[in-house]
Image (cartoon, rainbow, N blue to C red; front, side):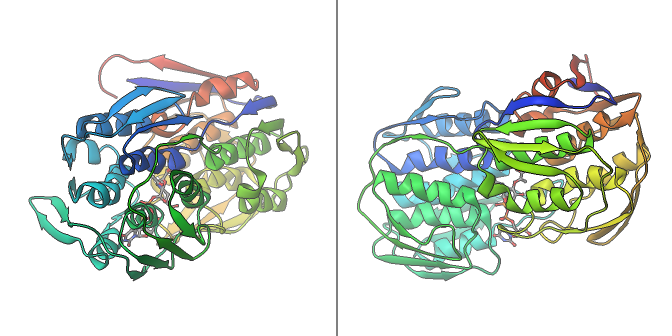
Amino acid sequence: MDKIVIEGGQRLQGEVRISGAKNAALPILCSSILTGGRCVFHNVPVLNDVRTMGRLLARLGAEVEGERSLTISAQKLTDFVAPYDLVKTMRASVLVLGPLVARHGRARVSLPGGCAIGARPIDQHLMGLEAMGAEITLSHGYVEARAKRLVGARIVCDVPTVTGTENLLMAACLAKGLTVIENAAREPEVEELARVLVKMGARIQGAGTAIVTIEGVDELQPIEHAIIPDRIEAGTFMVAAAITRGDVLVRDCLPEHLDAVTAKLRAAGAEITAEDGGLRVRAAGPLHAVDITTQPYPGFPTDMQAQFMVLAAIADGQSVITETIFENRYMHVQELARMGAEIHVDGRTSIIRGRPALEGATVMATDLRASASLILAGLVAAGETEVLRVYHLDRGYEKLERKLASLGARVRRVHVAGEQ
Ligand code: EPU
């Protein structure tokens, strides 16, 4: 098991390239199930979650080859089960449900259960598939869906769910007739999946808005596609630049996906300019407190909440952060407190009183974005910080420590034998 060791106090400077988006790659890899041929995806981030998805698709009988450029042939599937051992390590495994039922008429997927950041049910995925005519049964911790051919339906989601919208979108592409998904998630990753499906021959309108209309077709064709950059990785580097009072050009990002993050960084006192296919972040003076409420896109992303808490912890004044998406996404708070952060949590709201500096400590990562926040905290802490259990980080950030080191951070990965 690895740990990451950071010697705080370095100002970040230089350029960093952003990898492909994890949360776009995962549904896009699943979309290959809908075609009868060989899909080639480029700019795939090299991450554990993507490897897990590759293993799941291989287990279903698909041929999966490559890494950054990944080829998937899913003509002849031999199995239709997403087993517990894979779903428990990666909830996004549930994204095979829609495509499997749509193209093969059946799927058996382990129920994900709770996770570190909240209960995270999949009732909306199931409600939508049922509305399209799938017969859904739950037994022994698995959901089983069957349908001869799905039929188009009008589906009104209770909440805008990202993977739920993606599952239903993929399913609807091969359903008979018209499907309308209302209160759909508007995240750029949903829009990117729709772009891929349209390339395959799907008829989709309104992706990226709250109402998506899909006219089902009989079959989809394999495609070649390069995946968009990861807006959360980009946002994480933007915060790293700001809190270290650095000057960093975040290259290969899509600035229009980062408006909410950019606005909050500007409010905190950072200077952000569009430059050369990216965003330059500079912060010279003091950082100010900022209030943040997480919202579905285009609001402030929950996946950036933990990183901004580090900024709030060293800013002048008091910040209020409200987490509205996941009820338990404050697992980083206790660890940040061990580094000297002053944070008071009351339900979904946390009040952070900024301090001039944090102190290095040994801390433990509990989920992906919490891990990133602890590494950011290490960058601005006096002395040494050790972040344990970095396997969470490796699920969703590609070589974060190497990219930070290339910007001048003193950070290294250390292999530790045995348990942590
Ligand atoms: N929800 C329901 N019922 C459902 C589905 C969702 O009540 O059937 C609720 C959830 O409990 C939550 C809210 O709806 O309160 C939104 O959850 P959503 O379904 O949108 O989350 P997700 O699809 O499971 C994706 C990302 C997450 C990201 C969230 C929110 C992927 C693979 N995962 O999860 O990414 O936090 O959307 O933007 O796309 C991460 O990358 O660190 C991460 C956790």
